[in-house]
Structures are given as C-alpha cells and as structure tokens.
Image 1 (tube, rainbow, N blue to C red):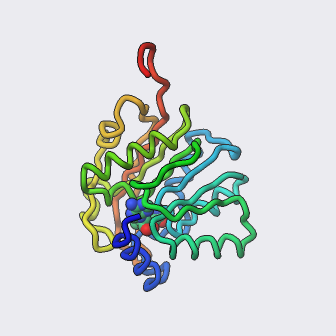
Image 2 (image 1 turned 90 degrees about the horizontal axis):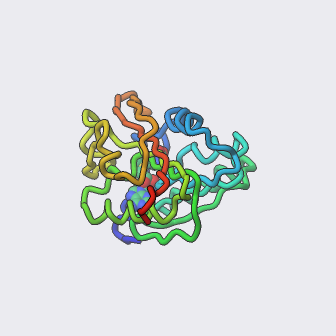
Length: 213
Ligand SMILES: C[S@@+](CC[C@H](N)C(=O)[O-])C[C@H]1O[C@@H](n2cnc3c(N)ncnc32)[C@H](O)[C@@H]1O
C-alpha cells in the first residue's frame, strides 16, 4: 500500500462527514440496475473495489448476497463501513485494506465492481497493474462493472486529477478478453446538488477463442 495515498484518503474520511463527500449516494441505484441486468445471482461472489463507505455492500447483502468483499486503500473507510454494517446485523461482508494496484488476490470473484476508483489511475503503469489484478481476481465467466467520470464530468475528484472515459474507452482499455454488455450515462448529484456525469460500463469476461490461452 502506498502510505502517502493511504494517509491522503484516511485523512479525508476522518475529516469529512458523509454529506461532505462529493461521491456519496444514499442509494447506489446506477450500480444495482446494471448488476440486475447482468443477471448475477445472490450466491455470486462480489468485490467492491475502492468501496469506501458506499452503501453497495449493504444493498447487496440486503438482497440476499452471501459473499461480498469490500477492498479499499483507506483503513478508516473500511472501519467506518464495517461498523455501520455490523450494527445493521450484516455478516456476509469481508474487508480488505489494500491498494488495488498492489494487492494480490487470493481467490476469484463473479463480479468486480468499481465506482470512481479507476479514474484516479492517471499513470499507465498503475492502470496496467489494475488490469492485471482484474485479470487475476475475476472468474472466467465473471462480470466487471466499472464506473468513472464521463468526458464532460469533472477533471478532478477529492483534490486529485482524474481521467475521464467516454463510450468505448473502457472496452478498448480492457481489450478482447472482455465483452461489453452495456454502457450507461448516469448523472450523479453530489450531496450538495452539483451534477457529475458518470459512465457505467458492464463487461463479461470472454471465454478464450480456440487457439488462445
Ligand atoms: C471517490 S471514492 C468512491 C468510493 C465508493 N466507490 C463509492 O462509490 O462510494 C474513491 C475510493 O477509492 C479509494 N481508493 C483510491 N485509490 C485506491 C487504490 N489505489 N486502491 C484501493 N482503493 C483506492 C479511496 O479510499 C476511496 O474510498
């Protein structure tokens, strides 16, 4: 874990209430719609990359999902999310404090979910490391749902520069090993009402063609 980046995010989560986090949403509706479209069953293992204090893990366990993992660079975010979910009686959530670009997955997941994490990886080496972890962690027939700022979205988030992705950009980045199933534009409103255009892309890992590894 990069200690500087971890302390940057820990500091944000220590200083700010949820209503002060630009990305906060009470209802992760954009993600849930595409997860429903993917047709993933509640016995599917899900990992929320950079899940922070998102409501997604709780929404999934509330829908009967039994194997949900939240990974985040910030141990402070993980602690807050875990305390909230445990107080609600949710038990099926696993927690990993790690930098996704340095993490070594120990198992595979049926769904890789990332809302607003990949877009912070402005360096090619970090994106390559992210794609390597996706490759290692996703089951052969698994789905990946990746949400980033759209081309007309902000060029910074939480004080950090971000890359914005348009239609087709993520499909080109992921390459032929992933089939694009759906792409949606989604207008997020920050808790103080500012519009932030996102794109959500849903992929299914493609089976290798004959002659490929
Ligand atoms: C903009 S927030 C989004 C949080 C959550 N996905 C949501 O939609 O509410 C970005 C999150 O990614 C985490 N993060 C940033 N860089 C990361 C990295 N390299 N590896 C893992 N998590 C990271 C931050 O700690 C933060 O919780």
